[in-house]
Image 1 (cartoon, rainbow, N blue to C red):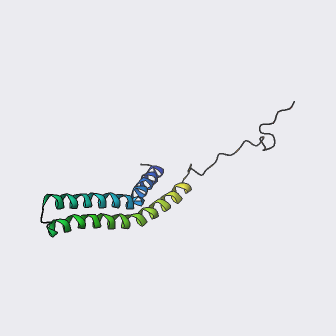
Image 2: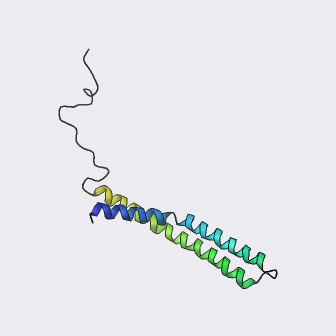
Image 3: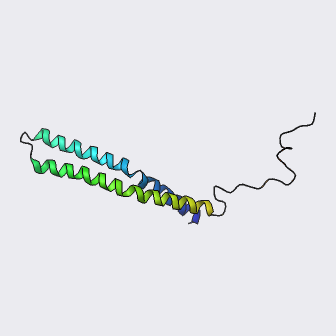
Length: 109
């Protein structure tokens, strides 16, 4: 696999990790929905069932907050290395020597 392809894959992985707080929020919502579902099903409101579901919500939130800075570091490093690769996205082809900015687009009348 080419180096540029590997860097692009790392860039995508970093972006997914940088979105960690969003994934944590999704897990929090799912955990709370489960907690309220168990609360509705059992009239007594068993604390053990609620604690498990709320624990799931908190674990996903923490995991998302931990993944975010790791993802940001991966994105920054991958973008810098991708910019340094041969034929990277920042490389601009040279203009022909006979073209100057003043002669481009001007026509003699």
